[in-house]
Structure formats: structure tokens, C-alpha cells
Image (cartoon, rainbow, N blue to C red; front, top):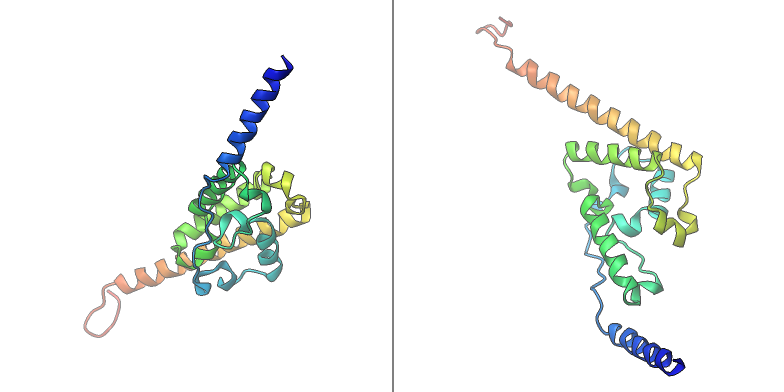
Length: 176
């Protein structure tokens, strides 16, 4: 019986070693600094700082890959989480999003941070500094909400300007 467990252990160890030669690609795509959320007007430095600390590993092209992201099979899970996070929202490409997309992302940020869904629990487990205090949650949510309000006002002003341009005028320039 003891020999059987030893053999199983050796086989499993061998499989683990061989698995280390098969790794997913961990990449940080090139970024355009001008498109970064850091250049987005109206974002307070303390919000940027907090987002860099707790969001950028999964939601930017500036991932800091921890040592354990080199170990198979953990690396497959981490690469999958990072790629999924980047597809959903990428702070490195924030400036490339339309105002409507930014509004939607701000809504998601507010909801997920307020409900303690982000950062993900498994991320917080391995990164204790990523646990947001109530004050940090409020700070991020206040920014997201205020930014949504600003975008709404901007869209409303644009709509009013567009409506004014559509008003018919007679040859003297007087509105009909």
C-alpha cells in the first residue's frame, strides 16, 4: 500500500514538473499613455492612486505578474482573470471609449465597488492591501457618480445645442 502511494506521488510530481513547460502567455500589451485613465479630466489623484493599487493588475495593460503566476496550473487561472478583466474594462484604454461606454463603465464601477464585488474576493485574499475601507469605497463611488452626472450634463448641453441648430429661421435670421 505504501509503495502504491509513493508511485502515485512520483507520477503526480512528474506531471507537475512536465506541466511547467506548458504555460499561457502573460503579456502587457503596449499602451498609449494619452489613452490612460490617468489623463482623464476630473479624476482626483487619490482615486487614481487607489485604482492603481487595487484595479490595475486586472483592468489595465500594466499588470504586475506575481511570482506564482509562473506556476502551472495557477498561471492559467490568473491569465484568464486578467484577460477577462481587460476585456470588460481597461484603464489603459479609457480615453478610447465613447462617452456612453464610459458612463456604463462608471455605473459598473459604482455598483461593484459599493457591493464589495470588486476587487474580486480571491484577489483580496492574496493581496490584503486591495481590501477597500469604507472611506475608500465612498471615495471611488463618489467619483464614479459625480463623473456620470458630469457626462449627463455634457450630453444634455450637446443635445440642447443640436436642438437650437435645428430651429428654422427666416431670411432675416429670426426664428419662425
